Length: 352
Image 1: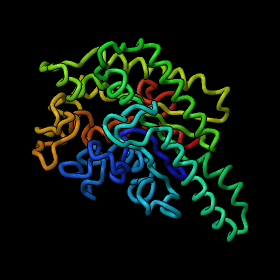
Image 2 (image 1 turned 30 degrees about the horizontal axis):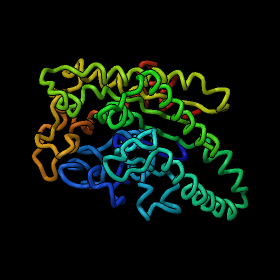
Image 3 (image 1 turned 90 degrees about the vertical axis):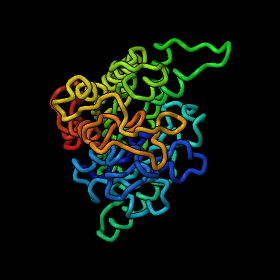
């Protein structure tokens, strides 16, 4: 349905780039129990199985079962990159300094630079050679068809709150106003989108921030034991998501010809939280991993996990299970409700 899918963002959409970063050991998922239900085992996906990108790739009928290769893998060059590349990095954010305290991560800025400096010229050369053999104008094909018909997916922002705005402050250090921080964050995201647009991107699918105030790590950090979410953290996510929609609404003049689909992960996930039985979920607040690592986010290496993973919302302290990731992608792909996919769904976006 699309020529290719290029992915940028954090651990919710990362499929193994951090495996190749020497300083990222605290933000990796290349060990069991991660991947326990994935055909390839532990690959660096922060889930027991698929992440949202895998599920979206399946729905878009991309090759290899929808699995997009990681940029950091040296094998992801030439023909291997023709149907897309995943640049995402667990722990990263929209802001350059987000996640630095957790170890080596690739910021959204660096991810786009990797696309521009390495993947873009590589693909251009590949398609130029292929079209020269067919006596076609490869340059025209690449810029007028291939890139505009490719999907650019962004899944970032949650870490800018969890690892930046809400991080513990040093003595005397003040926290910025939430509204000011959010406006600056969305303005930075807008600059990233405009940079991709200048490089040829025209179709953008953007995941909103999930209800991070409901995640096990946030609740545990505040010793919340009742089945409730942390409202101030969710309020920050909702503010960002509202600003994200406004950004899409206002993008026309600066990005003519661009089309957007915002997948409202917050709304879709909250529906699972509010109506778990409808989705076959029995555990909405506890992680499937019963033993966490030092950060409280990731599962302990080789640690025990639940046996009924399809009945859990969260696999670890932050990331959803395979079944919830698939649900988020299905709703973003096919929902006709603007509350779940705004202003159009990904299927409609792909068909433009």
